[in-house]
Length: 383
Image 1: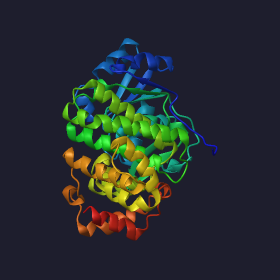
Image 2: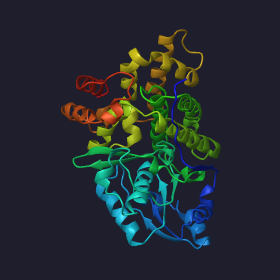
Image 3: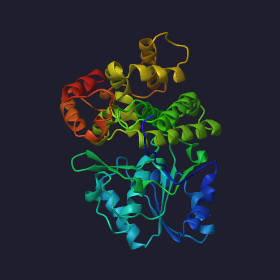
């Protein structure tokens, strides 16, 4: 066995209703004034009520920042950090989808005033410390609550990542009650996003290890076993909690064994056409699986036994069964399956491929090298 490192959040709390404990968790971290990062949808749907009550009960002051947007641009991150400094926050809570959690991580870092956002893009460029940080997801998809990664949209729709162990939170809190009202389409897209994390972590060319493999397999089992129920019967608390746990396991897996081609090709779709990240992944997933078959067939065959057990007798047929399952699942869950359905035209494919080629941090992890021409062909296949 090769030596490897594995990094994760300091502590996790998995419990329906766990938002009611945010006050005691914050107090234990020494917080007296927290900066709560979220979005208007979470705020307007009353998902902060329990958390705010718990914080008030412990006498902790709260400043709410609810201007987070999907695929958050750099100016949103910097504005939030400036507000956190202005109110002298001594702790940060991110409560919402992946974008809110990503912004919260960077606010916890930048609010200290020791770092500039444009200086920390890339891998391991963070030098300063962060404020105490608690992350609470309201979707089962990104796994951002346990990853050392924040994604920011910069300039003309380009996405850049900040990757540092400093961004890992003190607490990841999974409260399935916060996901009960999630619409089926969002449940489906975020669920498939988490499945992509598990699959790409399991087949990553770099840093794949026995612990990430175990987490990826269990993530895929939980997600594939509960995504239909969570979409069709959104009030099933057990299915919702299983989806959150599967998403977290997938996040832990890809935080240590990084994702590859699916994400590299999905990022430009989200940045240029404002397509939610999970749906962007879902759109290109089948084509990337087909492209990677030559290099990853054996690993795909192993994963196929989790989602479609008993199908196929040899490696090739099992790998094709995984591809077939993930081609059919989005259709079954009523998600768009062609790029043209989300506003992408043939004239856009060159620009998408050009931007995908900039995702070198991700492309180096793919089982098979993806060239510019390969990217154009993959996009064309799902147009």
